[in-house]
Image 1 (cartoon, rainbow, N blue to C red):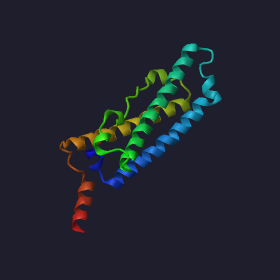
Image 2: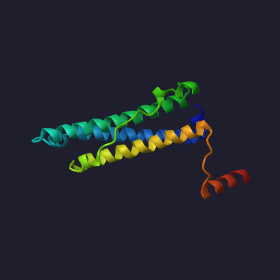
Image 3: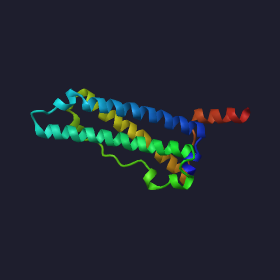
Image 4: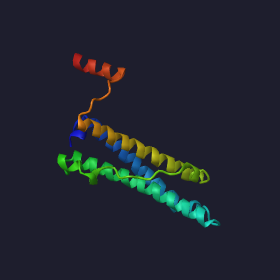
Length: 159
């Protein structure tokens, strides 16, 4: 896969490992929260609120599973378990996840809103990483490096 190969292998590995750890911790937190009594009691007297809450818990779980699956694919590619040509297949891309309507979640408990927002933010970061890798694969013109990157490049060439 040229897009991941264009990244520094150490950087790619650290990005994937860091995101994977974050996703796994968040998945465990989500499982613990949504299985707990407080989450089960939300909207107990209002069936529509209870269904909306259940749907949002599924969205969080789906979002996190898409992220984890993509990261596991990246890890498998790093170890040579998936070939360069195969990793470009659609089945290894980040799955589509539905965003939460903020107006719907405004009345949810704080912990639920936090998990929803954190999972959406993590999904956005992984999607941006995949998009950036796609740009690198297509050989599109990359934006000019910032001053810090230019300085690091100058230092690398000097030594």
